[in-house]
Length: 240
Image 1 (cartoon, rainbow, N blue to C red):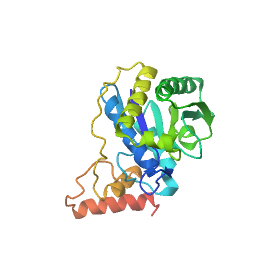
Image 2 (cartoon, helix red, strand yellow):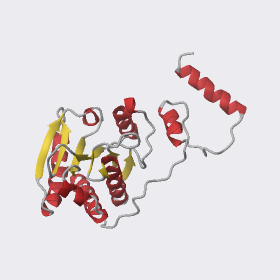
Image 3 (cartoon, rainbow, N blue to C red):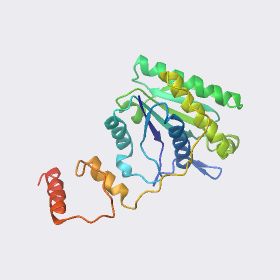
Image 4 (cartoon, rainbow, N blue to C red):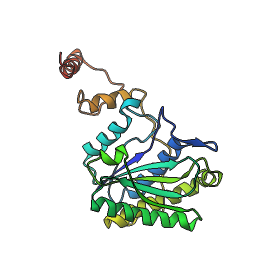
C-alpha cells in the first residue's frame, strides 16, 4: 500500500496568507507529520519534503500529478489551508470521481471532520470539485482544506504545533481506517524540512525528463565520458 501526500504550494508559491501564517508552511508541516505517523503502516511518498520545489510555476500541478502517477501510489492526498472568509474543515473529490474514490473520500472526511468538530470547528462537508490534482492523478484522490488562514480563530489554532500534531494524527488515522491499515502511534517525529543540496531541484528536474536515472552525490566529480553521455541524451530529447 502506497500513499502519496501532496503538501500544497511551496517555494515560490506561498499559497494563502493571513494572520502571520503562510499556507505552504502549514501544509508542509502537516504532511511531514502524516508521513512519520504512517511510515509503519504503509509506504509514503511526498511531492515535496522541503520548501524547495523542483518545478517552475507553469508545471506546478502537472508535476505533482506526475510524481504521484509515476510512484504507483494507491491513494493521493493533497493538503491545503482554506481562505476567503469562512471557518472549518472540508475536503474534495474530483467531479469525475468513481464511486470507490467518493467512498474513500467520505471515510477520510468523516474521520477528520470528527476531530475538527471535537475542537469546535464547523464541518463544511465533502464536495466534488473540478480540481487539476484530483482529475489528473491516476488513483483515487482527495484534497483536504484545513480551516481558514484568514480567520483569526482558525489561524490561531493552526499556529500551535501541538494542534498540527493532532491534525496530522487525524489525517493519518483516517487513512488507516479507509484502507484497514494498522493504526498509527500517536508520536510524531521531527517536522523540520529535509535540508537539500542547492542543486537538488535542478537534478530532480533532469530525472523527471529522463536525462538522468540514478541518484548521485551532487558534489562528486564527473568524467568527460559521463558529460558527453549526458549532453548526448539531452540533445536526443531536444530532437537534435
